[in-house]
Amino acid sequence: RAKEDGRGTHRFFEREMDQQVQRRREMELDLRRAFASSEFELHYQPLIDVASDKISGFEALLRWPHPEKGMISPAEFIPLAEEIGLIVPLGEWVLRDACNEAAKWPSEIKVAVNLSPVQFRSRNLVQVVISALANSGLAPKRLELEITESVFLAETEANLAILHQLRELGVSISLDDFGTGYSSLSYLRSFPFDKIKIDRSFVKDLAKRSDCGAIVRAISGLGRSLNITTTAEGVETTEQLDWLRAEGCNEVQGFLFSGARPAAEVGQLLFRFGARASRAA
Ligand code: C2E
Ligand code: MG
Ligand code: MG
Ligand code: MG
Image (cartoon, rainbow, N blue to C red; front, side):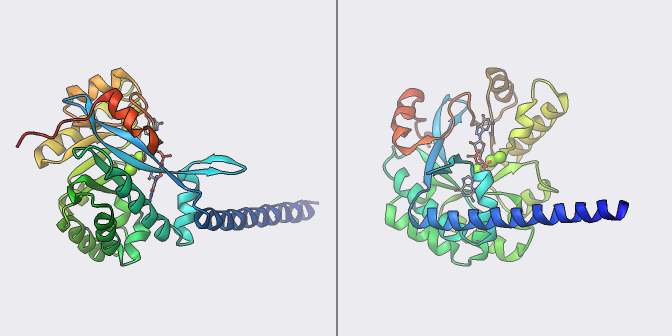
């Protein structure tokens, strides 16, 4: 009896596995089809300068309005796009589209673009950035590239060299999702980041948990002493905003201001919040 139950369970898992493989294969084909038919969109979320309460830039965030399944979150499709290598051409499209869009905005407004570690492996990342800037006419100082520390997990030396080349172009480099990795602090020593983005998980429980407060305070202080801008992600309440302001966080991003909106709404957002005037020299 027990033996039979075991075999039954085994068969059940096999069936589950087949279904998973099947689903993955379908999504893979769907992703390739979507890319080929230009189904992806970029939406833009404002980054708010805390001192002036105005917009300093926008983060470009991928959106997949699926014809049958509705909006699919990047958290769902980016891992697979990375696995099948589609993130390389998709990421190139993101860079070009974001630069073209930002070139139409007021000249003090920046655009932030997320980069996948897989794009670093593609080897022509620097060339792609040079070309996206040249074709759009966007000034390099208006482009911020966001990476996570996963970029340092493999091929560290090669990737550091690429980061240095990117910075030499005049673009800035942000360390995204700071605090969620394994040894974030050591990365601050290996590369001169322009910005640290404090992960949403620490901002979320600021008011409720004193440890989150302590961590955010420590990261802001670190940014201040290393002369790195600190941006808090996922700001949803005025309570969090007041807290972050008091701790000297430079920039905030979150639903309290706005979620990511289609490119056509950037003008309205700038009108609503105002554009931060360029800092006087
Ligand atoms: P991320 O770069 O850390 O982007 C911030 C995420 O937080 C976005 O999720 C944004 O919509 C969300 N968010 C912003 N404010 C709030 C808030 O107040 N509350 C909550 N709950 N969430 C907030 P999204 O758009 O789903 O993107 C998820 C991740 O997908 C991004 O995290 C980024 O790692 C990745 N991603 C998005 N677009 C791209 C892209 O073009 N290329 C690559 N390689 N990755 C991308
Ligand atoms: Mg990001
Ligand atoms: Mg982030
Ligand atoms: Mg994040």
